[in-house]
Amino acid sequence: MKFSIPLRVLSLALIGAAVTFSGASSAAVNAEAASALAKKSDCLKCHAIDKDKKASSFKKIAAKWKGKPDAEAKLIDSLTKAPKVKLADGTEEEHKVIATKDTAEIKNVIGWILSQ
Image 1 (tube, rainbow, N blue to C red):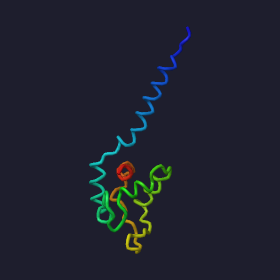
Image 2 (cartoon, rainbow, N blue to C red; image 1 turned 180 degrees about the vertical axis):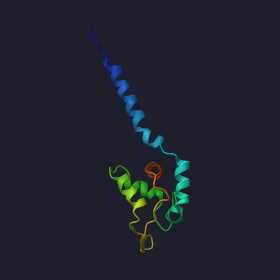
Image 3 (cartoon, one colour; image 1 turned 90 degrees about the horizontal axis):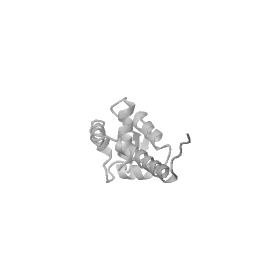
């Protein structure tokens, strides 16, 4: 018995899978939890969603890292290793460390920032 799938059916299945998986990362972001952790970690003291404060807005950060394969890794470093960062006024200070050690929570915040 020979099994064959018509090309049209296979194409539609592949397109459906691509659409499903391409939206998976954005659907996986829990914005409420990310916002709460950002507030708890004092991120909003220096950052805002759509306007620059002491540091760049999350929208600017998202635009800077859009499409870059190392975005998540670089942002994890920024949130967990307290690197020196340059602020809008030209001064430098250590970036605050996020108030969690849970990798899933950190990645959720990063996903939320990148979705802005």
